[in-house]
Image (cartoon, rainbow, N blue to C red):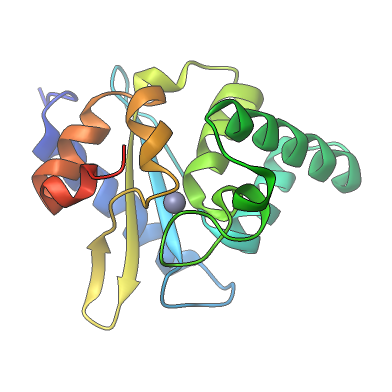
Length: 176
Ligand SMILES: [Zn+2]
C-alpha cells in the first residue's frame, strides 16, 4: 500500500496532477503561472487550481450559481481571510510581499483554500499543498511565495512545509 503521508510519494502524486493540469490547460501562459495541487492525506483525492484569472474563472465555475454572485462571494471571503492573516487591502489586491508583484489574492493557494473550505466544505489542514510552475525546462516545484508562506504552512497540512523545505531549502521558509 502506498503511504499518503510520505512526502516523496505525495510529491510524485502532486507532480502528476500538475502535469495533467498544465497539459489540459488552454488558458494564457505566463512565466510565473502557478498550478497549486492539494492532496488529501487520508484518501486518494486531489484538486488543482491555477493562479490569476484562469484559476479564478475555474473557481467561479466550480462554485456554481450565477457567476456575478460567485465572484463577489469568493472575493469577499478571500479578502476577509487575508485581512485576518495581516494583509493590508493594497497587498491583497495590488502588490503583495513577493517580487512577482501580484496581490496576495491572485495566487493559486488562496483559491485552493477557498475551494476546500467553502465549496467542498472540508478542513484544509487535512490537505497537502504542492505548487508548481512550468518553465522552459519543464514542470518545476514552486514553493509558496512571500504572500502565501505566511499562512499556507499554518492552514494546510504541515507536510506542505516539509515538502517546501525539502525541495527548496530554508529559503522557502523565510518571511513566515
Ligand atoms: Zn503566492
